[in-house]
Length: 263
Image (tube, rainbow, N blue to C red; front, side):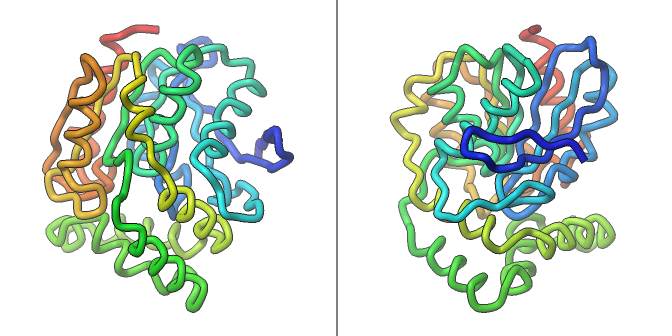
């Protein structure tokens, strides 16, 4: 399994697929799961792009450093990955925590990116107690304690009924998430305030919104789209994991956007 070492010595797991001579495209995962969340995007992306998927710190096969984490650290992990792979500039697609990472990067390392897809995400959560409560659940009962409520936030009831195997695949990823990594990233999200960062973003951006998303509600995505000059937005008839619930609609939006803006 390929890994790179970050500037603070943590091993970050990544995978490369697709065309080595293609333009790079980085995918960044949500809280609690790993790079396999992008399996439904891989086949189409690999036709054109040099696809880099990685596990956020403390997730999947990446190491978990001692928490709490900060959004800057999650962003620096991406810069370290790009440096290790000798990638000067890349397109980026992140969902939820991955989108938060993308916003930090777009504001603070804009020269490393060509365009950003910011999906089912938010720049700020006013209610910090939600994250404290979730962290307490994991401290007391491990990842099993948050698995079912997470699945219910992430997918509409209709999708859960029709696609039990896919729901179970995601649930298994949640169960395998390192509690220390989950707690560290929860703290990063709880303490995050990217509202000023978003105002500085000057890159082509697409904001994907789930119409039924209870985790990052549509208004959160609308604020991001209205703040970034020239940003496009796309609303999908999904809950939180729009790339899994509606891969066809998600892929059409994302790949149309990145192709439109070139390299």
